[in-house]
Length: 170
Image (tube, rainbow, N blue to C red):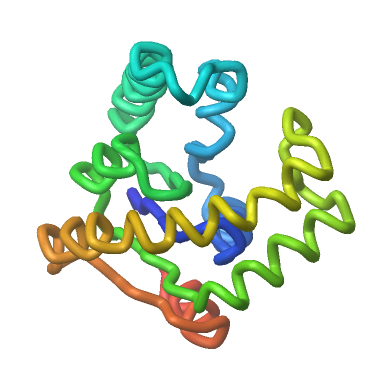
């Protein structure tokens, strides 16, 4: 079992990943967490060389992780996600509407539940703007990745489909 789960912030990637991990006890890689651990939160976003350095650290760690026989990864779309897609048996894209994802994100932010400690409360609130921009910018890249790996891609559009997918795993 090698599954990579992608989707925007608040789509339910980590919730699904944790359910799979709990049921099957497979290694897990949180690509968003890896970005923080690779120094992503401390870079100047206007400095391409810093962004490239963090991306390369992250990519090297991803390549080492996916050599295992079985794993689950999740994260927002990135070069790291493209790499996991190549080795995955299944690529899951959780395509929840942006309005629902924003609601989920704000709910988690207010509760401070499962949030990145590197990001302040206000930073999380302001992230909604980034969510909107990323949704528009990344959708063509996600669609291209899914088309390239059509035979192993699964698109889930609501909680019922996510639950059905989870129950179908053996």
